[in-house]
Length: 301
Image: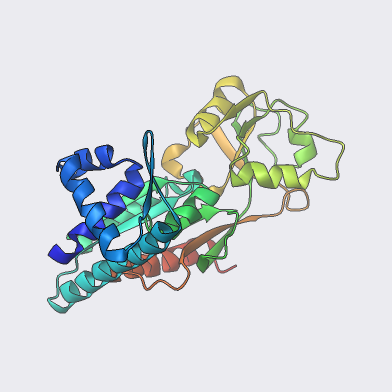
């Protein structure tokens, strides 16, 4: 709506960190955009940005204003989706901040929802742990799906799903015929691990806090697809959770075996939203669908 244009402009400047970069994204001149900002500052009676040599940064007043702006934009999106529902045609945009381990799971869910509601668009972005929760706070995400998050006060949990850690290895590996894997046995062989920003690595390190055994990976990566494929390529062991191991992602010469829960307890996937926020209809309905599907697949926690 027209009265929201200035709010959108200010939000764009905050995200870009520069009036010039924001003006390029908005397809207006930087002079016109700066006039809009000066007019808002004059109306408020205080500046909202610190002018820096290479851009701008919110000051204290600006932090208060941007929180109000993003609430207003979110509320308008919710109203739009409710109005669309009254006409029997669901519309809206759903934005998801998602741990890498869950990326293989989401395409089928998004496709199923859009089959029923083609007017709904989606944005799915890789954000792990603290970054996913930060995306809720700054309204760049409606929902967060994260494994073993670093929880913030602003994170409101919608549901949790328990996930054991699995070892991923080649069928020719000496441990490939085991029903479960002991962590101590795994670490007698070379291992490939995700970097420390990921929940799987956090669970493994926590399990060894009081142990003389240490994690000494021969390969580290921030890509679970690479780790899964490399486990077979080199004949070593990598680690993943079941939701990130869809059948189509497993080759014939690859197996996944759960780690013994006595060694590494299961972790939790959290689906959540910003505390106190009323989600737009499309996002709320999609969250309901995900909740039911995850519970059917993995059971209640």
